[in-house]
Image (cartoon, rainbow, N blue to C red; front, side, top):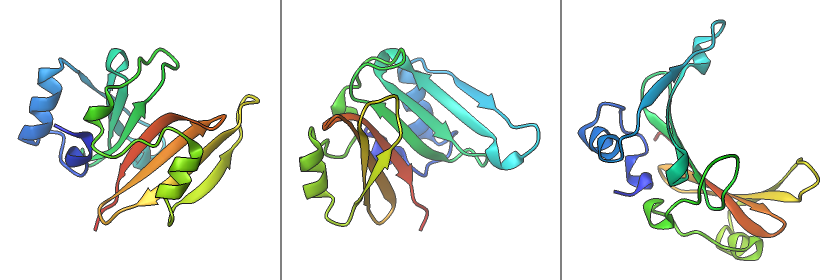
Length: 142
């Protein structure tokens, strides 16, 4: 099962439930006491290198894929992602002809993001010092 194929599915969709159970991943609820718009459900698997977010309607809307070890996350098995992973910023920019490069402020590291839009999802490739760092998949409702 590839993450890109799970985007837009409900938390209790049989494919999602099967994916989470097979990996023994628990889902937790996080809420904002002042704004229901920021209530989310999270499924985190640091040892597997990813974090999944479900929105307030329990729709899988974002997957954070850690390509390199960072903040307690191990590197993800890239075959799980379901989209190409471009190892260098140059390759990402070439692939993302319609993508936009964004400079991010950081702790002295040069981080850049290349975004590529598809019909039903977005992919953001984050590069640190020219090398792939994270890949974020986002559901784009039709």
